[in-house]
Image 1 (spheres, rainbow, N blue to C red):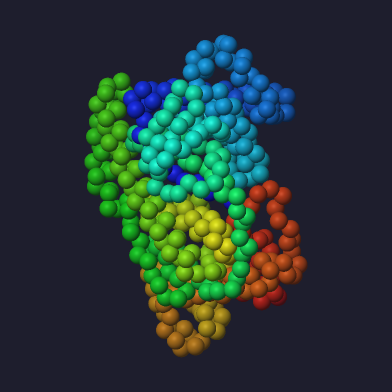
Image 2: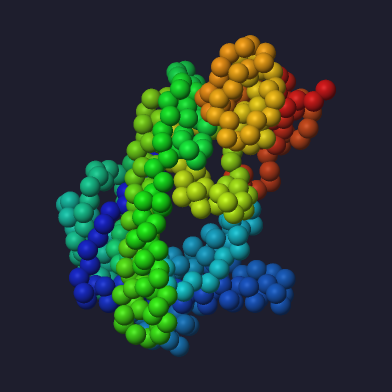
Length: 402
């Protein structure tokens, strides 16, 4: 299996200068290749492969001598990554590749010839040499690629991709199953009644963030060093918020995966939900999509089952005991008395139980393998979730129509 470890690196002043040159060279190669591929397609209707673009690298090096300052394999990998980006675009997993600029996150990739020296050093090929690092995890397996990145706040990281030689564990449904209902008041509510409060990371740093943004807005001259310092200070606040959020999501997802064998969540359309301007900031701050991604890959690594049910399943509008519909309620109503079973239900716990039961039902049917009617074939290109297209037509589904 492939596993990645992200570590902090500490380049010297000379190494930072060399990395800045390498970032610029790889960025230029990416932009030049993207421009040629897009222009060729517009003129001829046919694309250019990444291998054909690699053949232009020696020509560019003769014309632009400064390209030779960068390690050759990093330039080649930049072109190959562009080919992968186009493949993801045609498979429907992402948008059309865009041009890169010198602002924001910068990265280069070393596909080979990188060595780890103990727990505090990484040796890179070419002029970069040996660099100090803080390797906090055991690096087991063969090192495949190393991606060096510089964040807007000035921190440097290296993502180490290892192949540990083990095979993927077979998934088993024998064990505890849990349904998770994601929200804004409580970040996650499980079917067993556990509630995890929403930390609201952005709100805690909102005053500091607003103050830094105002200082940056006052410095309009982009050539003055004071503006660069103000921009760096703002980036550090954003980085703090991002790292705290990521830490919370990692810990919570690990806890849920360790305690359960089957994990069921809703297939949320976060991109559509943030169109609500009243809740867009809170939804973006919660990080539901990142949380689901963490749950998925951690469950797959441990041989557990991660399942997403349809976002149109009425989990909040069904009684988990009788499976009968309940009257529509305002979002401010957090608990209700069921008119059918005369039991007082917590709205979020009731939804989580319905999510778990729907996931177990789909799992028992073989994940849409026993659907009646409809198109049960997967999409031609890559799917963004585990939800099948014909779940609503399955036998026993609450969404099934007569």
